[in-house]
Amino acid sequence: MDRARSRAGRYVVAAVVLFPLVPWLAVGSLDERFGGNATLKSVANLAALFGIAAWAATLVLASRIRPLERALGGLDQLYVVHRRLGILVVVLAVTHALFLTLHAGGSALDLYLPSEGWSTFSGVIALVLLTGFVVTSVLGRLGYQTFVLVQRLAGAAFVLGAFHTFAVRGTSASSPGLTAYLAFLTAAGVASLGYRLLGGRLGVGRHPYRVAEVRRLDDDAVEIVMAPVARPLVFQAGQFLYATFDQDGIPRESHPFTIASAPGGELRLAVKRLGDFTGRLMQLRPGARAQLEGPFGSFCLNDDTGHSQTWIAGGIGITPFLSWARSLDGSIAVDLYYCTPGAEQAHFIQELYEIADRYPRFRVIPIRKSSLGRLSVEDIEAVNPKVSNGHVLICGPPVMIDNMRTGFAARGIPQDRIHTECFDFR
Amino acid sequence: MPELAVREPFAHVRVIDIAGDVTADSDDVVMEAYSRASTDGVRVILLNFAALDYMNSGGIGLLVTLLIRAQRNGQRMLGCDLSDHYRQIFELTRLDEAIAIHDSEPDALGAAAAL
Image 1 (cartoon, each protein chain N blue to C red):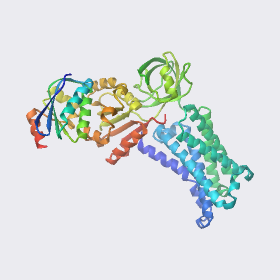
Image 2: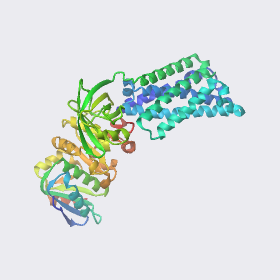
Image 3: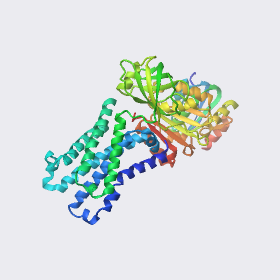
Image 4: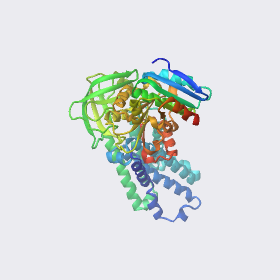
């Protein structure tokens, strides 16, 4: 949610990836490295150095430890960086292989054969596995468990890649500083991988709950009401948790859900059928046990009463706003645009109207695509000419977030007053 | 809510007489009235609230979506004849920032003619 913090965190990640350039530059002259055929090898080496640093960084980010989440402005932003880094690693690894191949000329094929020795061939295997895993993760429509398995296998491929990095006679060997830096990053990456494999939840509370009620909203959505069995989960409005349910027919998988209730009292989740697991949750029954982990996320209620707030929800992206609305005290001027395909998908709108009846400064504006089309920034400006003086908070599908962010930025709203939460990563 | 009356006091201006209760359930009736009013190059839509009995947050949301439609069609939206209670509601809900409110229909039509 904190845009400035998120940007600073991204700069740190970029610095971690690019840092190998410093010791690399210190151990040789550029004339020697960028003359004739040597250029090909230098590009290959730099791609390898940045690539292994970026790969280690993806594993560290995947550890999901709290300081990293905070540094990048929330878990959704952390996953965005993780995903982009993963794609970058593949690009750099392929660049590395391509330029080495060009450099080797006629003997290039030998580089890809086991006869070249394990120090080199481990890199070939790592490249193939990495490319396959990342392409599958990014382009494939994987089930949750398959996705987790692919991510872990990609982590295992990192070990091969790291072995290759240190086993071949490359630039790292000529610079103790570079070797030490890569060793540190590799250790951090492996430690993060181990932490995740051991089910790491450092600093994250686990809370047993019991399902008290399952309220059917329609054929594809339910609201799950839960009561704590022991110590309740303490959270801020807008945060999310990971939930595991114990009931026959529902996989014992941990999945993220935004908390729809206000802090305190019963805990509520709004679940829409978006995949296999959420489809099974339509069969959840009262009495089922649940294990909740969290809270996570920083898309929390902004209590700045000095500026108006524009909340834009796309579909089930209403859940954090629902939690916020249930926490309102009437002191904040809010316009909530609730965008749904039609009236029947506008779950909870009656409750939102009831809250608005209590607090007139809270306006609920239904935007039904079937009759009104898509919401635009011009629409919002027509309703609130002073929108650019306030905060804009958006939760919904990535396309909607991108369009709105671009539109508001074009009208000069500072980025640090546009707050977003993408639920796509969940 | 019965069908809302639509009048044409002069060219390019239409008056919609809002009557009875305006809630989220009034969507079809209000939008149908707007469709009837929004023809022939209409530039100003005047909502006359003289016969308004009750409006809640669902009705406020409905007026906002009406405002969005009018803006998309390049029309200005005005209001008139609000009771003191609903004038206060318009202020609290900031609707008066987007819909210019006038004391009476003649005042509003005068403003519309000047647009």
